[in-house]
Length: 328
Image 1 (spheres, one colour):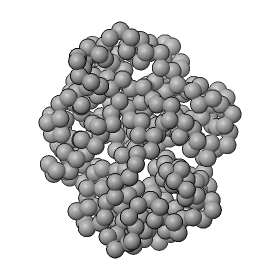
Image 2 (tube, rainbow, N blue to C red):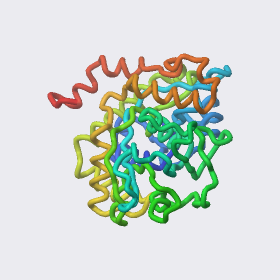
Image 3 (cartoon, one colour):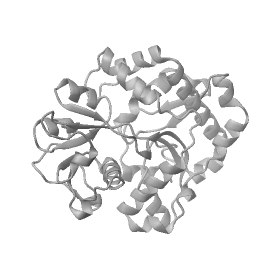
């Protein structure tokens, strides 16, 4: 009999990957029935993970450090699927913008707290600081009184409107867009500019509580093995994975073959076979955590990471056997 596990996502952008993991049978193979196809808020995740009402969560990347600093928090990160972002810069073709440096004194649109922090850090690392009024940032969703200098009210875009629409309609000058939105933006006649990735803890992060992990190490082991096998399937079965994405992911609009193929390839190229985080990604997300809440600086960023379960799986040869002689 399979163990029933909840693994809600924090953003629907996780679903192309999660649909493939589930449909591949990777979790089922390890005796788990995983309920992954529903969204949880950051606040509910902080409430439901410590009480073990939810066994795992695929997110909450920034707020956890300050929670830890204030004591009594049992949040633990067990692994990471992506360590770099995959956004593109979207602008109007007649904007005169050809790269990030041209965003000085422009209006940048973003969605959500973590995406806004990613954009803030990306631009800061490239010499553009919102605190110096080098540019203006406009967000659909703001919490904590407008962290990262985000202005929530500029022309009134609606919460369910794709951000590239803001660029198209002139509400903002530019936005960093992930697939498949950048595909739709290009089809609408907007200019899509490739930019360097940002090392970052984002997308599907495997989070749980220290109490659940201590009581159920076997479930943790099977859950991680299932996810590792799901990553392997995703990376080594492109046709099947693309078909699953096309048929099941329509959260940003129906996908045709081209859009589904683009989305698949963009995720597959940066998926982490062994689910280890990189130090650059942890460092950057920790900087964002401090930006959001100064209390985060009171903790060591590695306090929240427990990678010994992954290490045991890795040391057993489980992952290497999946890939054989393939260079992973």
